[in-house]
Image 1 (tube, rainbow, N blue to C red):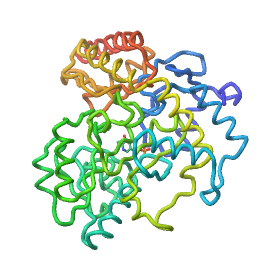
Image 2 (image 1 turned 90 degrees about the vertical axis):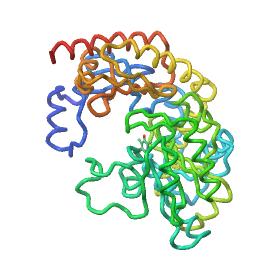
Image 3 (image 1 turned 60 degrees about the vertical axis):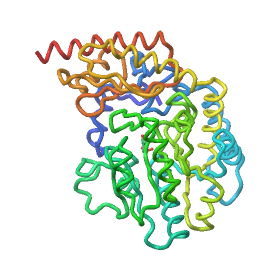
Amino acid sequence: MKLSETGLSEQGLKDIVKRYMIETYERYDFIAERADGMYLYDPQGNAYLDFYGGIAVNNAGNCNPKVVAAIRDQAGDIMHTFNYPYTIPQALLAKRTCEISGFDKIFFQNSGTEANEAAIKLARKYGIDHFGPHRFEILSALNSFHGRTFGSLAATGQPGSLAQDGFGAMTPGFAYAEFNNLDDFSARVTENTVAIMIEPVQGEGGVNPATPEFIEGLRALCDEKGLLLILDEVQTGWGRTGTIFAWQGYGVEPDIFTMAKGFGGGVPIGAMVTTDAIAESLTMGTHGSTFGGSPLCTAAALAEVEEIVEGDLAGNAAEVGAYLIERGNSLPHIKESRGRGLLVGFEFDGSVDATDVKHAALDRGLLVTAIGSSIIRCIPPLIVTKKLVDQAISILTDAVNSVAASSD
Ligand SMILES: *Cc1c(COP(=O)(O)O)cnc(C)c1O
């Protein structure tokens, strides 16, 4: 839908949002009317270079033509029918995802938080089935982010944060340990613990990659104590960190992993993947979702997955991501440039506010996200080139300098 078709002015549209929507997002001051590849466009046709990819979602590029065609075709065939009949794209996507990951079974959901709910429910059911009613506690990392529904929210290790504070008691059965601290995780395992759940790279928590020793150590700890290792790959999955799934890059296999963001090329879809043996705990009637695995969303995801695999977008993420991290070190006031693949964070030294830098970048035609007051996160579509990285770094340099000058 185009603004010109509505008869509204830009301000008129913004006024409607202000009047009618519950606003929990700090809005960027522009209207995204159209997107294509690496760019978003406002109603006047101004282009914005996309280094946030709809929050690590549009991996094969905005409005990837194959994904758009798949959605158009499927929308005319069948969009939705619940999960009683067999549907074609759902079956094919299940097969493809299991083949690519080497895992056995998938359960479809609609989002990252729901994919994690499925993982949490499966782990709890598995623990109680195999070890007794006490065994359902999940140990996750401080500073993690697993979603905003009550199970995933409780797994999110951010006590006292805006996400948790004021919502009453969190779901019981969760404990936290320090990320990248194997001793702390080890010390907090009890006879009630059934699983350890982490992000391979903490995304919302500030772009903190797990060290190889940490992930390998968690795998060994889980093997020793009979625990399940759950990896939340909602943000890291589907090529983002330089391999299709981040665990492949670490060479450590989880027991359960989840995906969402980059899976559907822009449509809402999530999934939980596991082995045959563990999947046995989710028997008939124990879990479900009206929309999960809909023909429309699975058709889109099937096209997106093929684009990621055939285009070796994971390989591009590894190469261009390393370049982006290296170039980030040249930014003014940079403290640390870090990440894995195209999940990259630039931490500043405290002399500039990241939110101000984000807005200054937007004014100059570059979309990035800010985490807290010191980190700028870059999560572009995985089709990004080194040339576009040079452009983004040049815009960011200018943005940082202008923020620094005005805060002097
Ligand atoms: C975004 C995110 C989620 C939540 O996904 P939603 O689709 O917003 O529910 C969960 N885990 C991680 C690691 C994420 O980055």
